[in-house]
Length: 261
Length: 273
Image (cartoon, rainbow over all chains, first blue to last red; front, side, top):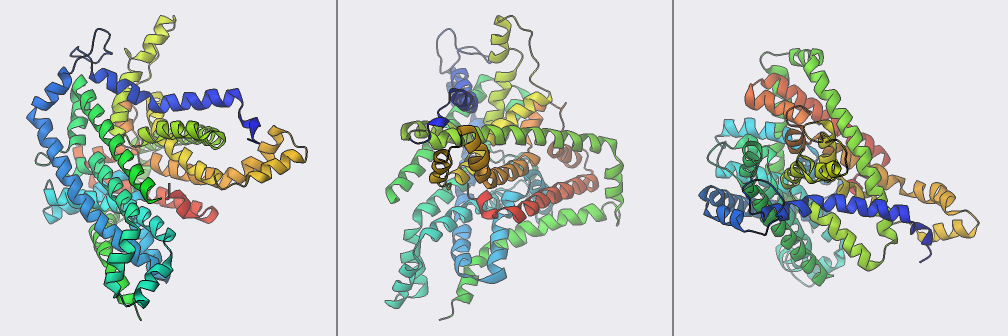
């Protein structure tokens, strides 16, 4: 390495302190979820799975998890379809229309969540979508579109445009070219976008707090209520399960990306 | 061969979803701010004269400023060390950055609640070393810690994207021509990383302005940032006029930040983390 000057000890100490700071929540949540006591503490006298057991016996958590999975999957399908189509279209569209498409596609990412929440709350009440499955799925799909648009656009920019042209010249129709030539070549981008869209829905809280009431009670909402009302190790158990879930998704994405590269 | 209509058909669903179903309600917020309870700029005048709003705005700007600086500095050091690290070390570092990034803000805030609490591990260590207990929760310190924790990975990845594009031969040339490591860093390396730093700062600042969960839980009602204030106006006391004015102003602040940034840096860099 020519850059030996960077291997200075102070830098390493600061960097590793920062990395430990970043991991601190995970290093705390996992042990606390295994505590045998009924209050928040580190397990000093043995480990116990009682909080996980409690979690799986509580129908309220079940119901929330089921709702979150259904809303997550439906909004992911919608966001992925809409975002992918828009990214493919925007790539070849010229001029202001392409620019408008890009700005619009990124908008939900730029707008502060509380502002989105306010806007959707008002409209959902007017449209009768308040506290409904359709309303929540629609809102989560809107928030997921930017991630799909970004990842698919990135995959498209790596794709040689002459491949699609070759397909057209060889007689494939436009629709067939998009479906059988372009789409398979950008599938890792589509998949990454779908994972991001799912995580967005799965973790979404602010907008959901505004647009739902008692009927739709997603997992983050139940955690939010739990944290604000009665902090118990059960929350740490849910948190641990969710962290594991995120790591699995992250690994799956890496694997698929690695296989394509 | 004219593909234009087909391409328009591809982007049409997004125009319906994000234009009609999302952008129109956003403009609705703007509309409410000048029509409810009556037409005019009365709400704006009321908000600008309110001392409660001034306090919230000041708190928000102060916390966002401090967190942005902290996140960018920590992110810079991490990116700097990452670039020079061995492949194995890099994988390890990336794991330590991506796992928190993928953990929901709610879980992280909950964890900080335990870590920073009066009976938490940090205070436990401090007490066993003979120090006083330090209040790190329900005050600005807690909020800053929680928000910085959330924002460091974004800062690091954006700055890293800029650093990765720097030609290492420039550093070697500077060293070869006799400049010391400090001078090389200040005069050659640091200026080259500035666009990435700038992009990271804008991204982090925009995210910080919209924070909601962390200030509410770690601030415990004593540190009220704009997000919580807006939601109180709407959900608890149904003052749509004031709530929508603040939402509009917050939105304008974010757009202004991005517009200023767009003049200095390629916007796509910010959003292709």
